[in-house]
Image 1 (spheres, one colour):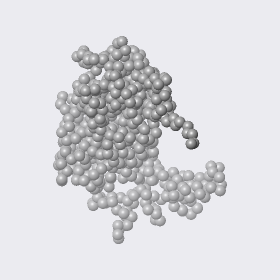
Image 2: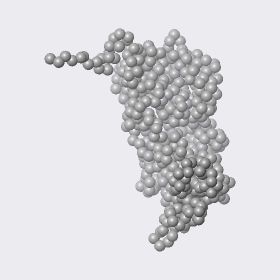
Image 3: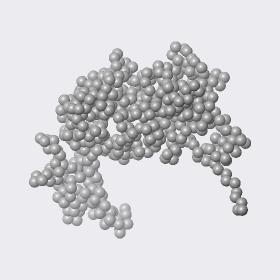
Image 4: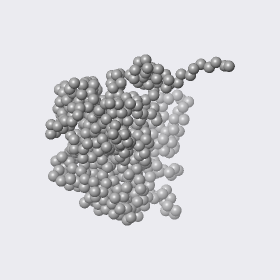
Length: 571
């Protein structure tokens, strides 16, 4: 017989370590072997990895806030065996992931009455049609936000493309071009042509040989000719733009003002009419080179991103419907079963190794072993109790949270498609409203819902202090500059607006890249997190991805991973 060496499987290896060093040693070995997640980004397909099975058995965990970070924290803790209670201050789950459909209401803190979302029937599209919605909070998912995409797959959330950039999107500035909007393709292509011509003319001064190898000059000039669509004029390469005769016009052809039909280079027997060429001075004077023209070059602004079908809150629904053992007596529950609404926490007291959550009435129930708090930093700083120091409160209070506002309007028809040939993407204005988002779905439908204004920072700081009517009027006026007749093309009387700094238990849209813009503050926040080993921070603000759902999920994994390590004796 051929003797065989005993096979040492990973399972037997982990079991052996556990027998010698206990559960904590096994947990550490599993980390080294990469058998479950850490707080850092993981390889694709493993970003939703659970905590070790049973690692939180016998523990109670409070999660403060039923936003994306809170729901993810609760899901992981419950599946690891913890008894989880989610304390939500408001009457709904989702936090800033708010999708408004027909009949949905919300109210800012200084409003006397709520706003209700109303849609109208247009053609065969009923008010409650699944495509009638406004993402009042997050609205898109970049391709590299792997943890969000992986959770969508795990939770059964269907995705569709979100178009960030359509070359037909418009740019409008009152101080430029007589206030008339211009297609982004014109700005980009005419700028590229002007810059390519400037570089090509360097050869006449003999300077090009100093920049690149002389043997590559011809290839370089050929590249510039293609890059900038340059034409040979004698010994020079020049950009003729709309005057090109031997190539297609990249900046496009004008839209017939009478028929609202975009002309082709040759419309059977009638020639197309190219847009006039924008000079370099005109492009620079537009001021759109300062940001809007090149946004799609940013890492997180691909030309096409992703979004859930029928609204961003489908991710919230996915978490709420996820199966978890709620308690020993309810082993087959849902995350939604763990949420207690209308439970704002006023104090967190750590006493004898346990945490007491005290509500606004001074009441507290049974204590928890651990707490994950997803409150915005300023709100967290105002929660009383001994769970953080006064210096930590000062640090949290100094985190700058960016104001952000939106306006939503339903179109009486999809005029942006029919008249301007815009299919998705964003048009830009130097007006206070800043942006208009067009829907990336249901093309050629009888109607559609636009984000008719989206602003942040200084513009939002001013905008949020407008009344509801003033905000809607500003959006209608800005829309008129991009789409003449705008007011009559939308259901203006049904418009809605939201300012996140004015929403209950919110401070604004997101922390303004604290790790980069306030590095000392971020360092202080990180050092203060879980200083007592009982209360842990989570939320997009506590990450390198503030303002994105991936930051919420990353922070939730980071907090619950640390809780599991403590529970297993590996603090």
